[in-house]
Length: 67
Image (cartoon, rainbow, N blue to C red; front, side, top):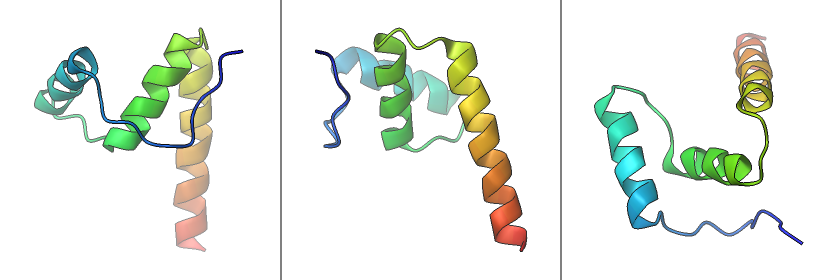
């Protein structure tokens, strides 16, 4: 059974290079969040589903900080 780990493992070489490309593109993302997204993609979660969840979380974050 394939399951995501709660422990943070350092990025592998190819993941690290992709993370660097993202950062050089002026995209601000936490390394842990980047790793989680990569793991979700490896589990064949559709990118559209990940995007939807991130949008909901971002919206909730904005409303919870303003109240």
